[in-house]
Amino acid sequence: MKNSYAVRGATTVEMDSPAAMDEAVCELFDEMLKRNGLDTDEIVCIIASQTSDLKTKNTATCLRKTGKCDDIPLFCVQEAEINGMMPRVIRLMLLIGHEKTNEARMVYLRRAAALRPDLKKE
Image (cartoon, rainbow, N blue to C red):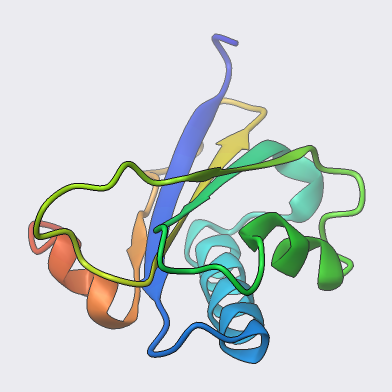
């Protein structure tokens, strides 16, 4: 899709619980929309991942629960296990179905901000 782009983001949870997952995923998704001036109808699909230590809930299920993604295809995968990786990380990639109108802003919240120290703080 030539006239599209992606926005990435990540966050963490302190404990593996459905409530913690819901809160973190919703916070990340809302912040990605806000910082990029996006509406959900501009999203073609969302790819989500979570580290293997998160077992109580699927990230896509958290997004569906918000009611904001009813018409968006969602796909969730487990992160590859890498020695020394940060625990309890959730990642989202939003595929946007139009050309960029401004610089895409990646969003890294909570402890996940340490994953991308090269990105300026918002």
